[in-house]
Length: 255
Image (cartoon, rainbow, N blue to C red):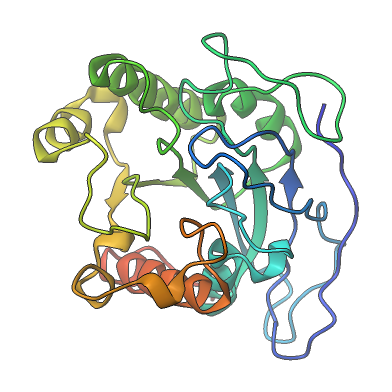
């Protein structure tokens, strides 16, 4: 079961609300990496510019919240720039298949076992009514056949649409910052088939880590001690790339 705690940002520079539902477990894609636990949903405070900021729910793995503090993760940094309220549900080692029935694992510091991304959708739907839902997984789904992962991704898109029929759904193509050009086996043909699935209708597909500003350079200075997850500078570069992709595809900002 996920642990929830309240968090309100105190830094004046961060004018967007940030919350998180983070459960820790072993990261099967990055042995030895154990991110710190992050805090829970925000209070009902509002930004100085609007009483009802747009809200975004980011669902993913340890990459989604690899920082020591959830509000400094790349997804919440991006939400700050978009002027969104940020909520995060991240289980390290999980994916569209990983963490579910195929390979459950105990959670670090939490009771119970891991869940896959689609398994978390019903409980998150009962807790959140976001304007934007961002799916940021797949990095830990390298052990099953790609065809099975594609089916699980499509199933997740369908579950997310049923859970949040009025939200904008965003799917992030899985990549690692250590090698932004590596498609992890999810090549262009794979993505074309996924985007053509009926469950993907209306979904915004983004590939922010493949941004030329990242893919065309040595990214070693953007990585943390495990040489796979981003450091603080990497978090900011990823956030900038995500914001550029969101804006380029017309995903809105708060009024």
